[in-house]
Length: 296
Image: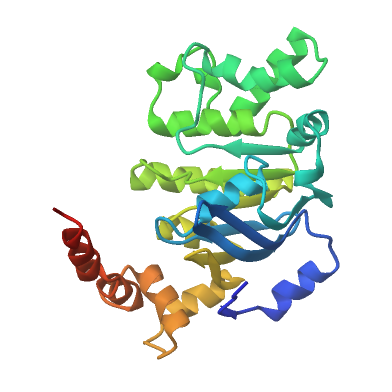
C-alpha cells in the first residue's frame, strides 16, 4: 500500500492513543476482474471521531465503505470492527453484528410503502423484543432527535429530499449504534439543507458518542464536519490527517510535490493541476488509434 504522505496533529494523536479503534483496516485490496479498485488501504477510526473519506469519482471511496459495512469481502487484507474480522463472521453472527452500526444511504433508502414512522420502527420490530407501545415511544424519540416528529404519519412521497435524509438518519440510529456510516449525505441537497444535515450529524455524534465515517466529495460539508480526513486517489490513501492540515494545504501555494498538489487541487476545485494533467496524458489518442486499427 502506498501512503503518499500523512500529516498528523500531536494533540489529536495523543487523544487517540489511549483508546482502541472501533474500525481497523489493514492492507485492504479489492479487485474487479483485472481492475484494482483498492490498493492496500490502511485506516483506523476511533470512538467519537468524525472521519471524512473523500476523493474523485472512481477513487474507491464507496467500495471502501461497502467493505466497512460487510457488503464486500476483501481480496487481500482485513477489515475489523470492534476487534472482529468482518470476513470471518457467519450469517447469524453478522446479523447480530449489524445491530452495532447504522447506515445512512445516499437517497435515504426509505421504503415507499411505509410511513416515516414505520420506516424508523422497522429495525426495532425486526431486531428487538420490545412491545408495540415501547417501539412507538422510541420512534417518537428518534424522530424528535432529527427534528422530524411531525412527519411520523407521512409517506416518503410526501416529504422533501432533506426530510428523507433526516428520516433515514432516524432509522439508522434507532438501535443506538456505536458507529454511523454516511454515504454522500449532502448529495442532491441545496446548500442550506446540506448545512442542516451536517449540523445534525455533528449534534448526534456529540450526544450519542458514536464514531462516524462519512463518504463525500462535497468540500464545504467535509470541512464543516470532519475531525480527521482521508483522501483516496486511484485506490491509494493519498493523505491522512486532521482537518487543520487539509485546510492548511488547501490554502497554501503550490508545493512542487505531486501528491500534495493533487490533494490541493481537489480541495480547491482548481481547473488546472496534477489531476487534469493526468487525464490529458491518459493515452486517449493511442486508444482511438488502436481501436481504429481494428476496424475492417
